[in-house]
Amino acid sequence: MLKWFASSWRYKCPRCRSAEMFKTPLDIKKPLEMHKNCSHCNLNFEPEPGFYFGAMFISYIITGFLFLSIALLLVFYFKWSVNAAMLIVILVGILIFLKILRVSRSIYIHMLVKFEPKRAK
Image (cartoon, rainbow, N blue to C red; front, side):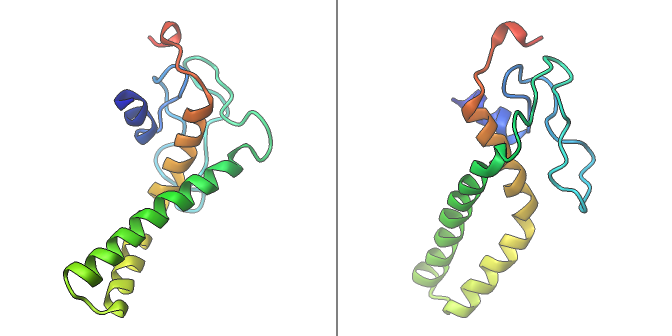
């Protein structure tokens, strides 16, 4: 499970865990630009149009829990005002927006494609 999460976090191919899924360096104008296929095992990163629609739900879950946790911690534990807590949540959201977009896509494809150790290396 730890290797699965590490592979998702680093945007590696889910089948071989060797090649990069996203094009680097990050282009702010096209943050979700991916390679068509894995350079190592030739896995198609977009098997059908709209494949990553489910990643939207993963992104929603991650941001919902993260932002709610931050807001509740600031308001109830540190006794901040709701407006100040929302300002912090918005700033955190701006800072991690692109990471959440990419991680949610990576997690989604990792959930659906099985790791094949024989294809690695």
